[in-house]
Image (cartoon, rainbow over all chains, first blue to last red; front, side, top):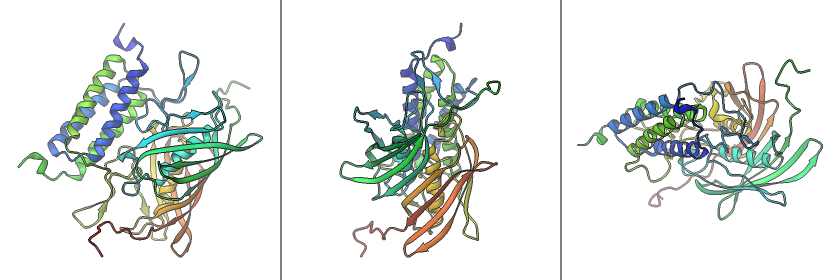
Length: 204
Length: 204
Protein backbone atom coordinates (compact mmCIF):
# COMPACT_ATOMS: atom_id res chain seq x y z
CA UNK A 1 0.00 0.00 0.00
CA UNK A 2 1.52 3.33 -0.99
CA UNK A 3 0.72 6.77 0.33
CA UNK A 4 -1.00 7.45 -2.98
CA UNK A 5 -3.81 5.09 -1.97
CA UNK A 6 -4.81 7.23 1.00
CA UNK A 7 -7.91 9.29 0.15
CA UNK A 8 -7.01 12.95 -0.38
CA UNK A 9 -9.08 15.31 1.80
CA UNK A 10 -10.94 17.95 -0.19
CA UNK A 11 -9.40 20.58 2.11
CA UNK A 12 -5.90 19.63 0.94
CA UNK A 13 -6.84 20.11 -2.71
CA UNK A 14 -8.41 23.47 -1.77
CA UNK A 15 -5.31 24.55 0.18
CA UNK A 16 -2.96 23.50 -2.64
CA UNK A 17 -5.04 25.43 -5.17
CA UNK A 18 -5.09 28.51 -2.92
CA UNK A 19 -1.30 28.32 -2.70
CA UNK A 20 -1.07 28.28 -6.50
CA UNK A 21 -3.47 31.26 -6.70
CA UNK A 22 -1.19 33.23 -4.39
CA UNK A 23 1.81 32.17 -6.49
CA UNK A 24 0.11 33.38 -9.69
CA UNK A 25 -0.53 36.77 -8.07
CA UNK A 26 3.05 37.27 -6.88
CA UNK A 27 4.46 35.97 -10.19
CA UNK A 28 2.85 39.03 -11.77
CA UNK A 29 3.66 41.53 -9.02
CA UNK A 30 7.11 40.37 -7.91
CA UNK A 31 9.99 42.83 -7.94
CA UNK A 32 12.49 40.18 -6.87
CA UNK A 33 15.89 40.03 -8.55
CA UNK A 34 17.39 37.42 -10.85
CA UNK A 35 18.62 35.10 -8.09
CA UNK A 36 15.27 35.03 -6.28
CA UNK A 37 13.31 34.53 -9.50
CA UNK A 38 15.57 31.65 -10.51
CA UNK A 39 15.32 30.07 -7.06
CA UNK A 40 11.53 30.38 -7.08
CA UNK A 41 11.35 28.88 -10.57
CA UNK A 42 13.39 25.87 -9.45
CA UNK A 43 11.00 25.24 -6.54
CA UNK A 44 7.98 25.61 -8.80
CA UNK A 45 9.45 23.12 -11.29
CA UNK A 46 10.10 20.69 -8.43
CA UNK A 47 6.52 21.06 -7.24
CA UNK A 48 5.16 20.51 -10.75
CA UNK A 49 7.33 17.41 -11.12
CA UNK A 50 6.00 16.11 -7.79
CA UNK A 51 2.41 16.60 -8.95
CA UNK A 52 3.04 15.22 -12.43
CA UNK A 53 3.46 11.53 -11.74
CA UNK A 54 0.63 9.77 -13.60
CA UNK A 55 -1.65 12.81 -13.97
CA UNK A 56 -5.10 12.55 -15.53
CA UNK A 57 -4.68 12.03 -19.27
CA UNK A 58 -7.18 14.78 -20.04
CA UNK A 59 -8.97 17.63 -18.32
CA UNK A 60 -10.81 17.11 -15.03
CA UNK A 61 -14.31 17.06 -16.51
CA UNK A 62 -17.17 16.24 -14.20
CA UNK A 63 -16.50 13.39 -11.79
CA UNK A 64 -18.75 11.63 -9.31
CA UNK A 65 -18.26 12.41 -5.62
CA UNK A 66 -18.60 9.75 -2.91
CA UNK A 67 -21.85 11.38 -1.73
CA UNK A 68 -23.55 10.90 -5.10
CA UNK A 69 -23.18 14.51 -6.26
CA UNK A 70 -20.81 15.50 -9.04
CA UNK A 71 -17.67 17.60 -9.01
CA UNK A 72 -16.57 20.10 -11.66
CA UNK A 73 -13.31 20.79 -9.84
CA UNK A 74 -11.47 21.74 -13.03
CA UNK A 75 -13.99 24.43 -14.04
CA UNK A 76 -12.24 27.71 -14.88
CA UNK A 77 -14.80 29.81 -12.98
CA UNK A 78 -15.82 27.72 -9.98
CA UNK A 79 -13.43 24.73 -9.87
CA UNK A 80 -12.04 23.86 -6.42
CA UNK A 81 -8.84 22.59 -8.08
CA UNK A 82 -8.48 25.27 -10.76
CA UNK A 83 -6.17 28.14 -9.66
CA UNK A 84 -7.62 30.36 -12.42
CA UNK A 85 -11.07 30.14 -10.79
CA UNK A 86 -11.41 32.93 -8.18
CA UNK A 87 -13.38 30.59 -7.39
CA UNK A 88 -16.90 31.87 -7.89
CA UNK A 89 -19.20 30.51 -5.18
CA UNK A 90 -22.66 30.64 -6.74
CA UNK A 91 -25.71 31.12 -4.49
CA UNK A 92 -29.24 30.23 -5.58
CA UNK A 93 -31.96 32.14 -3.72
CA UNK A 94 -35.47 30.75 -3.27
CA UNK A 95 -36.88 33.45 -5.55
CA UNK A 96 -34.68 32.27 -8.44
CA UNK A 97 -32.04 34.95 -8.11
CA UNK A 98 -28.47 33.69 -8.58
CA UNK A 99 -25.55 35.67 -7.21
CA UNK A 100 -21.92 35.60 -6.16
CA UNK A 101 -19.52 37.93 -4.40
CA UNK A 102 -15.95 37.71 -5.57
CA UNK A 103 -12.70 39.64 -5.29
CA UNK A 104 -10.52 39.87 -8.38
CA UNK A 105 -6.83 40.73 -8.11
CA UNK A 106 -3.95 41.53 -10.43
CA UNK A 107 -4.33 38.28 -12.38
CA UNK A 108 -7.62 39.42 -13.96
CA UNK A 109 -6.35 42.73 -15.31
CA UNK A 110 -7.13 44.31 -18.68
CA UNK A 111 -6.98 48.11 -18.63
CA UNK A 112 -4.64 49.27 -15.84
CA UNK A 113 -6.26 48.69 -12.45
CA UNK A 114 -9.39 47.28 -14.05
CA UNK A 115 -10.89 43.88 -14.76
CA UNK A 116 -10.45 42.77 -18.40
CA UNK A 117 -13.73 43.24 -20.27
CA UNK A 118 -13.54 39.60 -21.34
CA UNK A 119 -13.27 38.46 -17.71
CA UNK A 120 -16.46 40.42 -17.01
CA UNK A 121 -18.04 38.47 -19.88
CA UNK A 122 -16.67 35.19 -18.44
CA UNK A 123 -18.23 35.86 -15.02
CA UNK A 124 -21.53 37.00 -16.54
CA UNK A 125 -21.70 33.99 -18.87
CA UNK A 126 -21.27 31.74 -15.86
CA UNK A 127 -23.71 33.47 -13.51
CA UNK A 128 -26.41 33.91 -16.17
CA UNK A 129 -25.95 30.27 -17.19
CA UNK A 130 -26.37 29.23 -13.56
CA UNK A 131 -30.00 30.41 -13.64
CA UNK A 132 -30.69 27.58 -16.11
CA UNK A 133 -28.61 25.00 -14.30
CA UNK A 134 -30.30 21.80 -13.14
CA UNK A 135 -28.52 19.21 -10.98
CA UNK A 136 -26.47 16.97 -13.25
CA UNK A 137 -27.69 18.89 -16.30
CA UNK A 138 -25.62 22.03 -16.83
CA UNK A 139 -26.86 24.58 -19.34
CA UNK A 140 -24.77 25.78 -22.25
CA UNK A 141 -24.78 29.24 -23.79
CA UNK A 142 -26.60 29.99 -27.04
CA UNK A 143 -26.05 33.75 -27.20
CA UNK A 144 -24.58 36.24 -24.75
CA UNK A 145 -24.67 40.03 -25.07
CA UNK A 146 -22.60 42.15 -22.70
CA UNK A 147 -22.96 45.93 -22.34
CA UNK A 148 -20.18 47.82 -20.59
CA UNK A 149 -21.44 50.86 -18.67
CA UNK A 150 -18.17 51.73 -16.94
CA UNK A 151 -14.77 50.25 -16.21
CA UNK A 152 -14.84 47.58 -13.49
CA UNK A 153 -12.05 48.21 -10.96
CA UNK A 154 -10.06 45.26 -9.61
CA UNK A 155 -11.27 44.41 -6.10
CA UNK A 156 -14.56 43.23 -4.62
CA UNK A 157 -17.40 42.62 -7.08
CA UNK A 158 -20.97 41.41 -6.98
CA UNK A 159 -22.45 39.36 -9.83
CA UNK A 160 -26.09 38.43 -10.11
CA UNK A 161 -28.63 37.13 -12.57
CA UNK A 162 -32.24 36.00 -12.88
CA UNK A 163 -34.43 34.28 -15.42
CA UNK A 164 -36.35 36.68 -17.63
CA UNK A 165 -38.44 33.95 -19.32
CA UNK A 166 -38.35 30.34 -20.47
CA UNK A 167 -39.42 29.24 -23.97
CA UNK A 168 -39.23 25.49 -24.51
CA UNK A 169 -35.64 24.40 -23.98
CA UNK A 170 -34.41 28.02 -23.95
CA UNK A 171 -33.85 30.04 -20.78
CA UNK A 172 -33.55 33.82 -21.26
CA UNK A 173 -31.49 35.32 -18.45
CA UNK A 174 -30.43 38.84 -17.47
CA UNK A 175 -27.81 39.99 -15.00
CA UNK A 176 -25.07 42.42 -14.10
CA UNK A 177 -21.75 43.02 -12.39
CA UNK A 178 -21.50 45.73 -9.77
CA UNK A 179 -18.98 47.36 -7.47
CA UNK A 180 -20.10 48.63 -4.06
CA UNK A 181 -21.24 51.84 -5.73
CA UNK A 182 -22.81 50.95 -9.05
CA UNK A 183 -23.52 48.55 -11.89
CA UNK A 184 -20.59 48.44 -14.32
CA UNK A 185 -21.64 45.74 -16.81
CA UNK A 186 -25.04 44.38 -17.87
CA UNK A 187 -25.70 41.20 -19.82
CA UNK A 188 -28.49 39.12 -21.29
CA UNK A 189 -28.27 35.70 -22.80
CA UNK A 190 -30.00 32.57 -23.99
CA UNK A 191 -29.07 29.24 -22.41
CA UNK A 192 -30.27 25.73 -23.10
CA UNK A 193 -29.80 22.13 -22.11
CA UNK A 194 -28.14 20.14 -24.87
CA UNK A 195 -29.79 16.95 -26.04
CA UNK A 196 -28.34 14.04 -24.06
CA UNK A 197 -24.93 13.11 -25.41
CA UNK A 198 -24.50 9.50 -26.47
CA UNK A 199 -20.89 9.03 -25.46
CA UNK A 200 -20.80 5.27 -26.05
CA UNK A 201 -20.99 4.39 -29.73
CA UNK A 202 -22.38 0.94 -28.93
CA UNK A 203 -25.48 2.59 -27.47
CA UNK A 204 -28.25 2.85 -30.05
CA UNK B 1 24.83 46.44 -4.74
CA UNK B 2 22.41 43.56 -4.22
CA UNK B 3 21.37 40.94 -6.75
CA UNK B 4 17.98 42.67 -6.90
CA UNK B 5 19.60 45.59 -8.73
CA UNK B 6 20.64 43.41 -11.67
CA UNK B 7 18.21 43.92 -14.58
CA UNK B 8 15.92 40.90 -15.00
CA UNK B 9 16.01 39.47 -18.53
CA UNK B 10 12.57 39.27 -20.15
CA UNK B 11 13.32 35.60 -20.91
CA UNK B 12 13.55 34.82 -17.18
CA UNK B 13 10.12 36.36 -16.52
CA UNK B 14 8.75 34.37 -19.46
CA UNK B 15 10.32 31.14 -18.22
CA UNK B 16 9.05 31.66 -14.66
CA UNK B 17 5.54 32.33 -15.96
CA UNK B 18 5.67 29.22 -18.16
CA UNK B 19 6.67 27.20 -15.10
CA UNK B 20 3.64 28.53 -13.21
CA UNK B 21 1.37 27.72 -16.19
CA UNK B 22 2.60 24.12 -16.10
CA UNK B 23 2.04 24.04 -12.33
CA UNK B 24 -1.54 25.27 -12.76
CA UNK B 25 -2.21 22.51 -15.27
CA UNK B 26 -0.85 19.71 -13.08
CA UNK B 27 -2.55 21.14 -9.98
CA UNK B 28 -5.83 20.35 -11.73
CA UNK B 29 -4.80 17.00 -13.25
CA UNK B 30 -2.62 15.53 -10.50
CA UNK B 31 -3.46 12.14 -9.09
CA UNK B 32 -0.66 12.32 -6.52
CA UNK B 33 -1.30 11.21 -2.95
CA UNK B 34 -1.44 13.19 0.27
CA UNK B 35 2.31 13.20 0.92
CA UNK B 36 3.19 14.42 -2.58
CA UNK B 37 0.47 17.08 -2.55
CA UNK B 38 1.67 18.35 0.83
CA UNK B 39 5.31 18.37 -0.33
CA UNK B 40 4.39 20.24 -3.50
CA UNK B 41 2.34 22.77 -1.54
CA UNK B 42 5.31 23.47 0.76
CA UNK B 43 7.57 24.15 -2.24
CA UNK B 44 4.95 26.40 -3.82
CA UNK B 45 4.57 28.39 -0.59
CA UNK B 46 8.38 28.77 -0.40
CA UNK B 47 8.45 30.00 -3.99
CA UNK B 48 5.64 32.48 -3.33
CA UNK B 49 7.47 33.75 -0.22
CA UNK B 50 10.64 34.18 -2.29
CA UNK B 51 8.74 36.23 -4.89
CA UNK B 52 6.79 38.23 -2.32
CA UNK B 53 9.46 40.49 -0.90
CA UNK B 54 8.42 44.05 -1.72
CA UNK B 55 6.00 43.20 -4.55
CA UNK B 56 4.22 45.87 -6.56
CA UNK B 57 1.54 47.43 -4.35
CA UNK B 58 -1.09 47.04 -7.07
CA UNK B 59 -1.59 45.26 -10.37
CA UNK B 60 1.02 45.41 -13.13
CA UNK B 61 -0.81 47.94 -15.29
CA UNK B 62 0.98 49.26 -18.36
CA UNK B 63 4.62 50.13 -17.81
CA UNK B 64 7.19 51.74 -20.07
CA UNK B 65 9.84 49.49 -21.61
CA UNK B 66 13.46 50.63 -22.09
CA UNK B 67 12.91 50.75 -25.87
CA UNK B 68 10.11 53.32 -25.56
CA UNK B 69 7.25 50.86 -26.11
CA UNK B 70 4.89 49.87 -23.32
CA UNK B 71 4.36 46.55 -21.57
CA UNK B 72 1.03 45.10 -20.45
CA UNK B 73 2.74 42.10 -18.85
CA UNK B 74 -0.02 41.56 -16.31
CA UNK B 75 -2.80 41.34 -18.91
CA UNK B 76 -4.96 38.25 -18.36
CA UNK B 77 -5.06 37.39 -22.07
CA UNK B 78 -1.67 38.38 -23.44
CA UNK B 79 0.51 39.23 -20.44
CA UNK B 80 4.06 37.83 -20.50
CA UNK B 81 4.03 37.63 -16.69
CA UNK B 82 0.43 36.45 -16.21
CA UNK B 83 0.18 32.64 -15.91
CA UNK B 84 -3.56 32.82 -16.71
CA UNK B 85 -2.76 34.27 -20.13
CA UNK B 86 -2.23 31.39 -22.62
CA UNK B 87 -0.69 33.92 -23.70
CA UNK B 88 -2.47 35.10 -26.82
CA UNK B 89 0.06 36.34 -29.39
CA UNK B 90 -1.95 38.74 -31.54
CA UNK B 91 -0.95 39.22 -35.19
CA UNK B 92 -2.01 42.24 -37.25
CA UNK B 93 -2.07 41.61 -41.02
CA UNK B 94 -1.58 44.42 -43.52
CA UNK B 95 -5.20 44.04 -44.67
CA UNK B 96 -6.47 44.81 -41.16
CA UNK B 97 -7.20 41.23 -40.18
CA UNK B 98 -6.20 40.40 -36.60
CA UNK B 99 -5.62 36.78 -35.58
CA UNK B 100 -4.06 34.43 -33.07
CA UNK B 101 -3.48 30.71 -32.78
CA UNK B 102 -3.62 29.35 -29.26
CA UNK B 103 -3.84 26.01 -27.49
CA UNK B 104 -6.07 25.81 -24.42
CA UNK B 105 -5.62 23.01 -21.88
CA UNK B 106 -7.41 21.71 -18.79
CA UNK B 107 -7.26 25.08 -17.02
CA UNK B 108 -9.80 26.64 -19.42
CA UNK B 109 -12.49 23.99 -19.03
CA UNK B 110 -16.24 24.54 -18.77
CA UNK B 111 -18.28 21.59 -20.11
CA UNK B 112 -16.20 18.39 -19.88
CA UNK B 113 -13.43 18.43 -22.48
CA UNK B 114 -14.56 21.82 -23.78
CA UNK B 115 -13.54 25.45 -23.40
CA UNK B 116 -15.81 27.41 -21.01
CA UNK B 117 -18.21 29.57 -23.02
CA UNK B 118 -17.04 32.57 -21.02
CA UNK B 119 -13.41 31.90 -21.98
CA UNK B 120 -14.50 31.93 -25.63
CA UNK B 121 -16.06 35.34 -24.89
CA UNK B 122 -12.84 36.47 -23.20
CA UNK B 123 -10.71 35.55 -26.22
CA UNK B 124 -13.19 37.10 -28.66
CA UNK B 125 -13.46 40.31 -26.63
CA UNK B 126 -9.68 40.61 -26.75
CA UNK B 127 -9.20 39.78 -30.44
CA UNK B 128 -12.11 41.95 -31.62
CA UNK B 129 -10.84 44.79 -29.42
CA UNK B 130 -7.39 44.42 -30.99
CA UNK B 131 -8.79 45.57 -34.35
CA UNK B 132 -9.38 48.98 -32.75
CA UNK B 133 -6.06 49.07 -30.89
CA UNK B 134 -3.66 51.92 -31.59
CA UNK B 135 -0.14 52.04 -30.13
CA UNK B 136 -0.34 53.45 -26.62
CA UNK B 137 -4.12 53.85 -26.96
CA UNK B 138 -5.90 50.56 -26.22
CA UNK B 139 -9.59 50.30 -27.06
CA UNK B 140 -12.23 49.36 -24.51
CA UNK B 141 -15.41 47.40 -25.14
CA UNK B 142 -18.79 49.08 -25.47
CA UNK B 143 -20.90 46.05 -26.38
CA UNK B 144 -20.02 42.44 -27.20
CA UNK B 145 -22.38 39.79 -28.57
CA UNK B 146 -21.24 36.18 -28.73
CA UNK B 147 -23.09 33.44 -30.62
CA UNK B 148 -22.21 29.84 -29.85
CA UNK B 149 -22.56 27.54 -32.87
CA UNK B 150 -21.02 24.42 -31.32
CA UNK B 151 -18.97 23.39 -28.33
CA UNK B 152 -15.29 24.38 -28.58
CA UNK B 153 -13.06 21.42 -27.66
CA UNK B 154 -9.96 22.01 -25.54
CA UNK B 155 -6.86 21.98 -27.75
CA UNK B 156 -5.63 24.11 -30.65
CA UNK B 157 -7.84 27.05 -31.65
CA UNK B 158 -7.76 29.90 -34.12
CA UNK B 159 -9.23 33.32 -33.29
CA UNK B 160 -9.61 36.12 -35.78
CA UNK B 161 -11.38 39.42 -36.25
CA UNK B 162 -11.68 42.36 -38.63
CA UNK B 163 -13.20 45.82 -38.62
CA UNK B 164 -16.69 45.93 -40.11
CA UNK B 165 -16.93 49.74 -40.02
CA UNK B 166 -15.83 52.81 -38.06
CA UNK B 167 -18.26 55.54 -36.97
CA UNK B 168 -16.60 58.43 -35.16
CA UNK B 169 -14.90 57.05 -32.06
CA UNK B 170 -16.65 53.69 -32.45
CA UNK B 171 -15.10 50.66 -34.15
CA UNK B 172 -17.52 47.87 -35.12
CA UNK B 173 -15.68 44.55 -35.27
CA UNK B 174 -16.64 40.99 -36.19
CA UNK B 175 -14.77 37.76 -35.57
CA UNK B 176 -14.84 34.10 -34.68
CA UNK B 177 -13.18 31.17 -32.95
CA UNK B 178 -12.51 28.02 -34.95
CA UNK B 179 -11.08 24.56 -34.54
CA UNK B 180 -9.20 22.95 -37.42
CA UNK B 181 -12.54 21.83 -38.81
CA UNK B 182 -15.04 24.61 -38.30
CA UNK B 183 -16.17 27.84 -36.71
CA UNK B 184 -17.52 27.23 -33.20
CA UNK B 185 -18.26 30.76 -31.93
CA UNK B 186 -19.00 34.05 -33.70
CA UNK B 187 -18.96 37.52 -32.20
CA UNK B 188 -19.53 41.15 -33.02
CA UNK B 189 -18.83 44.14 -30.87
CA UNK B 190 -18.39 47.87 -30.56
CA UNK B 191 -15.10 49.24 -29.25
CA UNK B 192 -13.93 52.77 -28.58
CA UNK B 193 -11.01 54.80 -27.30
CA UNK B 194 -11.77 56.42 -23.96
CA UNK B 195 -11.13 60.12 -23.63
CA UNK B 196 -7.48 60.65 -22.68
CA UNK B 197 -6.87 60.04 -19.00
CA UNK B 198 -4.85 62.70 -17.21
CA UNK B 199 -2.89 60.45 -14.88
CA UNK B 200 -0.51 63.12 -13.63
CA UNK B 201 -2.29 66.03 -11.96
CA UNK B 202 0.72 68.31 -12.63
CA UNK B 203 0.27 67.83 -16.37
CA UNK B 204 -1.85 70.59 -17.94
